[in-house]
Length: 293
Image (cartoon, rainbow, N blue to C red; front, side):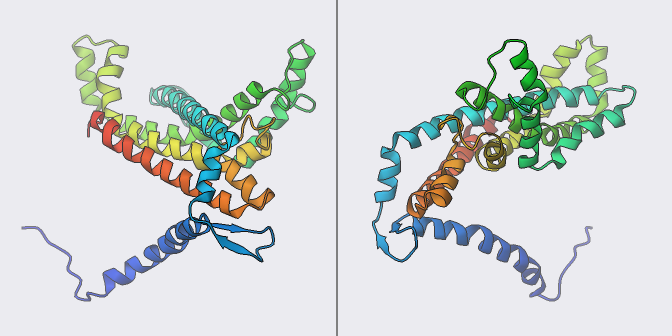
């Protein structure tokens, strides 16, 4: 016989849900609806004249070669950041899961970057790799390497990828370590007794059991790369040199705030939102099949 908790007051569950529903409506659905509405309008920079233009803003952004270039930059950036933030995090988690001296200090030091804001993380990397004031940047120039990420497009992209990935590694590390510690030790000990090597145990036992965690982090890291890396790019490169590091989220900012083109900015926000939702649905539709719960 199982005891069940019954609320005599039928209104109480709805009252408990009201704050969360209100937050979701105010901070997600309402801005999303406003974005779709403004994407069908053209306004002057002062907001004094508004014209309804249907889908002309969408046609304009897709006809813009700079927007197509921003899509390419975003895809490269998102794939690189997701890979470089998940793979090292998994390696560090496997090392931290072992019985090593000073493990608590080791884990604490890895977790620290998670507390750093994206813009602050970018400034830290700026003071390291800036060609004029950076410690390693000046060293690279001194030894004859032509290092100047403010002028070189490839170097600028590399730097923002490294900075954004470094910021996210600690987040992934926490989840991978929790997943590793939830794996029953008896399973690993049985495999070791049967003669399985550490590498074989990892790929046939540990990694499949980590697949739910890996799938969750894959979705979270892609969303992070698309949306939450604005601070890194803005503080390090401002989308430059040229448009080399202008991602979709940064272009939304520049068109809306700097160029005062709210219609195009809203249309880009709508496209970005639809793209990320579609990407997440594809991941749940195809990649989740390989997840072992």
